[in-house]
Image (cartoon, rainbow, N blue to C red; front, side, top):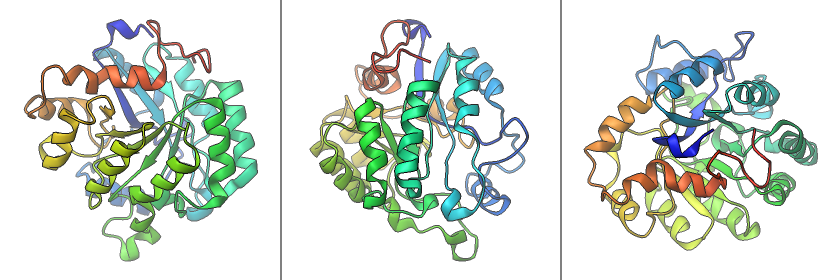
Length: 299
């Protein structure tokens, strides 16, 4: 990965389909998400197809799935498959893992192995889908390992399209995705680099408060078209958080083409734009000129 040649780093994309056609969510929850994003009928890309898509645009992309086996009873896409697919396209893809926090110390051992043996560069959590508050002590052995190995943890925050419109929300509890619950994690693991994913509706002010108060907490802008960003998010991105806000699309539900087109119309200072699109992610991931990180040696 030649970072200097990249125009942007998308820190939030989903590997939704495995090589054998298995999806990371049940048909009911996946269908609700497609309906929410008005993405019905869109073909879900494979990891090689994602690589080709981003390579064509001279972008890099962080790729992950969600391990929520305990809460959903649905088998995850293998972290090893994500890592291997990204390793084959290391010029453009950055692999993140996902370990169900209900797995406790077994999950912690898995996380260490994924980083040390498979080049995983961070971990994705979706508290609402995984059915656990981020500050539940069951997850703490997992966070301990992630902090120790020095890779980021990305937490879904706010509303989710998963389960939207399904009776009972498909069992998805929105309260677990309040960013104030992640504030406890930032206190208890002060060296852990944390990303709060999405404009955190209805808790946008809470997310801004946590990110301004805790030095290692970032915000990604995925899951929303920039034309719908709350004004306070734009204001903070231009000022207090200009070094801690990250470009993310939520591909394939939202394409980077659509996101970037709307971002061009947003009132963002010219000197802040490159920070959001690439520079902040380069610093967060510790990437050098050719995309390696000191902690993992690259994927």
